[in-house]
Amino acid sequence: MFLKKVKTFINYKRYLDKIHRSNDDAYALQIIYKLFPEFTYLPFTPFALNPYTIVHILNDILLNDRKQIIEFGSGVSTIVISQFIKVNNLNTKILSIDNNKGWQEIIKKEVKKYSGDDNLTLIHADIVKNLNADYIVRKNYSWYDNTIIAEKVKTLKDIDLIIVDGPGTEESAYIRYPALLSVKNNLAKSFCVFLDDTRRDGEREIISMWNNQFNGDLKFEKMYATISVGKKYSTKPLSH
Image (cartoon, rainbow, N blue to C red):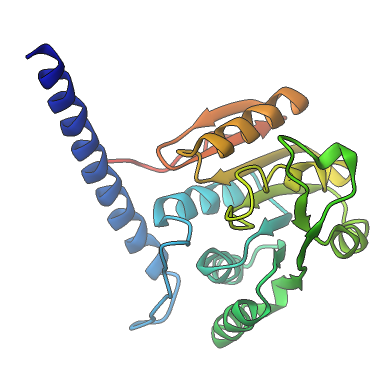
């Protein structure tokens, strides 16, 4: 009887959590769509960042005056962030990296539709065997072709926002581990990292390892987690 009550309580808590997440995303979508012309359609998919996560990112860009963003995994977030930068006339640039060239062409077309492409650079990099020993954890040897990433990153200074929602984890639960390490030599003194899908064990372990290395302020949210390093304002959006 006791175990049955515990199971019922857990299921009820999960149900309430799902309702709260749905309310937060509905609220966030209202904010996002105000950035676009009337009747705009945005291609949200099951792989996209949740709307609430995106609004948290927008808050961080605005309130902490982010200037150079790197995004691993292009998607609807790329479209929204580019539009946000344009509408608010910000001096901010995005470098978005993805291994799916056809998908990036779709994102490029959508961004161009709203004339936000001046602030965006899209880079295609295949998933290859990684040979950098510093990037290898839990026997994961896969990562974006870092010769392509390193060539572009070395031209950037003071990267202050890193968004990690790729690659997909079909090959390994730890495939995203190299993300922060691949840009560490070009980070600003103050920066923030967003890692999506931290309900999964692999991502939770990855961001904990990153935080140990960079001695940041780690916060777990419902679907994602953040690390803040240096001076910052709190940017978590209003939640219902």
